Length: 130
Image (cartoon, rainbow, N blue to C red; front, side, top):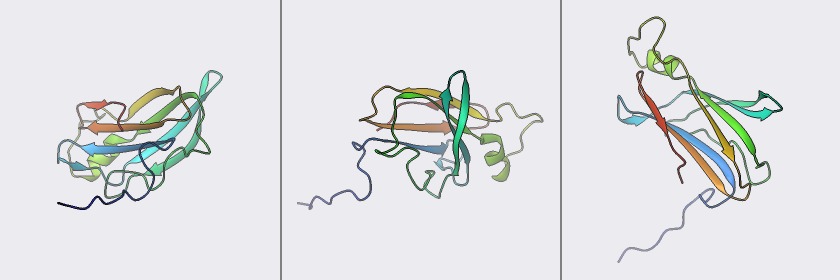
């Protein structure tokens, strides 16, 4: 029987917001993707921060922590054309998809939200992950 090893870092059940991107063309995490994070304030999205993904396709720290989680509308903008161009993918000018913009709501500030992106130069999909 194998011993149970506790997970390191923030548990998925901890309140917060995380994200990552997978490159479905190469079948691997997308490293070095610029992600802009914003919150809806009145009728316009206001920037909170910009991050880059690491070798695992994730940003180093959660976008929102238990201390900063708030109910509201948010937006993630993944700069996918820049990423695929750096990977050597020849894209048309203009690219079919320049940025993947995901607008989503946080209804429960005591929950963990994970917003992954699976992308190619021609399509992307997202879901509420764990």
